[in-house]
Length: 77
Image (cartoon, rainbow, N blue to C red; front, side, top):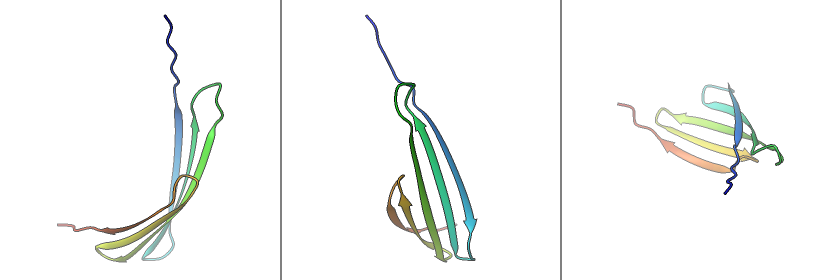
């Protein structure tokens, strides 16, 4: 009886840059390999984070890693 399994390796890199007092840009890159006989999958995304109030922020992400939008409220005690 034999069994086979695949080991997945993923490398994720990210960098953020403050554009202004309220706006941040984050770039992300991911490289994934599932094994020696499979092709590598690479992806990237860009995220804008607008912090328009001390407790509120709006975040949008576009790229091959994902697409989405978030409205976030944080209460800090």
